[in-house]
Amino acid sequence: QVQLVESGGGLVQAGGSLRLSCAASGSIFSINAMGWYRQAPGKQRELVAAITSGGSTNYGDSVRGRFTISRDNAKNTVYLQMNSLKPEDTAVYYCNIYARSRSIGEWNNYWGQGTQVTVSS
Image 1 (cartoon, rainbow, N blue to C red):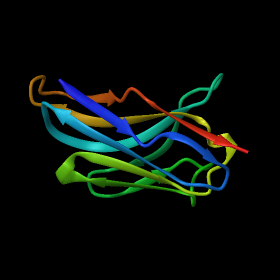
Image 2 (image 1 turned 90 degrees about the vertical axis):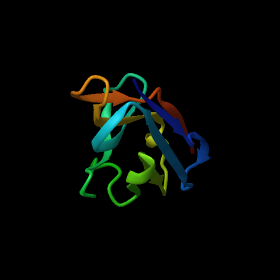
Image 3 (image 1 turned 90 degrees about the horizontal axis):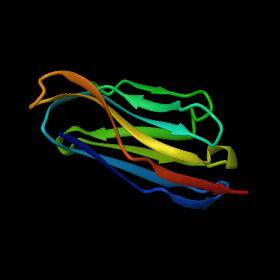
């Protein structure tokens, strides 16, 4: 079993900042990519940011320059620093990892339960 626990969401005013964290635990052999996705009401889930095990990053166009993704491989944790938040950033943010489980022995995508981020104008 692989578990992802997210934290750091909440309510913030436009222009403010939040930092999301996602810690992976359980039967993990190895983690490749880690990332964050978001889904606003009535919209499809979209990539916010992703980071490979080697540290290469990729950002969605709407957040590039405002958000920063990082990871701590020793802690199996990925972070998302969100600055200059806008009301359109309001969504449920989901953590995602591509990992190999010790018990299953295969590579799979795993998802967190989601954390709400609300940006007021």
